[in-house]
Amino acid sequence: MSLLLQLFASFFQIGLFSIGGGYAAMPLIKAEVVDLHGWLTAVEFADLVTIAEMTPGPITVNSATFVGMKVAGLAGVVVATLGNILPSVIIMLILAKLYEKYAQQTLLKRILEGVRPVVVAAIFTAGLGLLQLALGSVTAPDLFAVVVSIISFLILNSRRVKIGPIALLAIGAVVGIGYALLF
Amino acid sequence: MSSDTDNRWEKKGKPTINLRFYLKLFWTTFTLSMFTFGGGFVIVSLMRKKMVVELGWIDDEEMLDFVTIAQSSPGPIAVNGSLMVGYHLAGIPGALVATLGTILPPMIILTVVSLGYKAVADNPIIAAAFSGMRAVVAAIVLQVSWALFKPLAEKREVLPILLFVLSFLALFVFKVNIMIVMVAVILFSVVHSLILVRKEKHS
Image (spheres, rainbow over the protein chains, first blue to last red):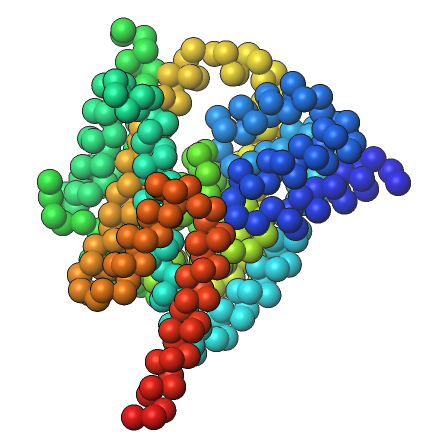
């Protein structure tokens, strides 16, 4: 099997079996990319995890791009990424169609209503995790991060100040650089 | 703290589908994806801010449904979630445009980064920018969970609050995998709904 086909098949499998968020996919990616095909060394894989955490985007798409680029250049990037998202696209199109058709049905409506508090709890948990990450340690938190987080929260919660989340992130980046240069 | 949160958004309904809309959808998903480092729930929070509050394309309940479906299906939540919104707004073309907008930023960035990632990882300016953005991202996600929690609390029903507290404890304190929590609550809801349906028939 040619290299491009192998890349496609490998990332198709990763896409198909990575249910439940990025960290669930890590062992799967390692098994395919490091252990089975040897496309990355263990050290390169550790670097990939660091980069994936620092850069935007889903970890599986990041891995597909990174491995594709290393193994087969831009063609590899396109093939690996397409392979990676194809299972999602197919399955989600079917589910989206079903949702539009049955969302108003009592049973499904009730089930989805039941799960909504879980999603809110999951988003809250993710937020707390991100806060921990931003503050460093809980006992001696990074004061700069505390101030930035509180001000951002107040701005987002206010109806008078109209700054979108993306503009706010850009401001956060600039403030972070300014703070590092000053102190 | 101002009590005026963005809960009073108005759903403007489905937009007119034309080239302008597709460009807007592409640009929206592209910019959202560009800033979603730190896991799938970040894009969900940004999506709510942008698509529910600013654009009025979907409402909060639809968004939570999309997250539920995106989370319990294979593949990244970010890709699945955008695809659902795109399909909801404009069918299959909308789904494909939203998906493309979501995967292009990581593809471009990782392609560039893979060429010289040591320089990027060790760059103090980039590290400083990230420390600032991390603090903002935490605030965004927390504020969105607050805005979503409030209508839940205002209903004054015991069950949703109880489910919220229990799943929060399971996720945050006991570190239970979210898939397990979701499957458990889905099973519970199925049984609960069936009992309710039965009661309604009898009465």
